[in-house]
Image 1 (cartoon, rainbow, N blue to C red):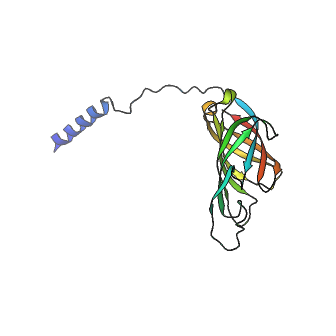
Image 2: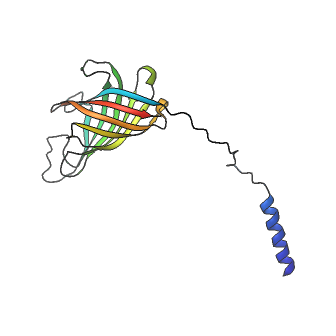
Image 3: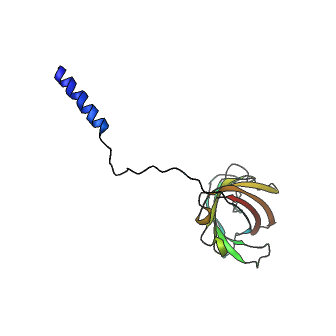
Length: 184
């Protein structure tokens, strides 16, 4: 019994001193954070519904009594976007990218919307980069704020906020001004 116990102690000692080499082994290096950059963006989101060139389409709607099915933004519905981003307010302004994502209209009213949008830029220094917004959007407020939760390209690991203001609203079109501060 004593020999078995001694042998176990010797094996434990040698095992604990043996170097560990495995497929996940890597050398530890100190973390050196890169300096943060702050970028301010200004652009316009242009949504169009109910036409052959629609950029916003309802993809799901609750089958409940009392829903106003004539509106694409009825309660308990979801819409998807593939809308252009322009540099200026005018409809003929240069297209600098597009917004793709979805909005969910929860509950019995449409005053607050849950938004996920990815703003992909296709012009200039930001070509190939994008920022992602995921937040609640209280659409009845004149000015509102959404959270920037990520990005890619030049905006990798981005965070920040977007200040929104609806500049034009009709039954078929909406233009929303975005002033975005991105920390990356």
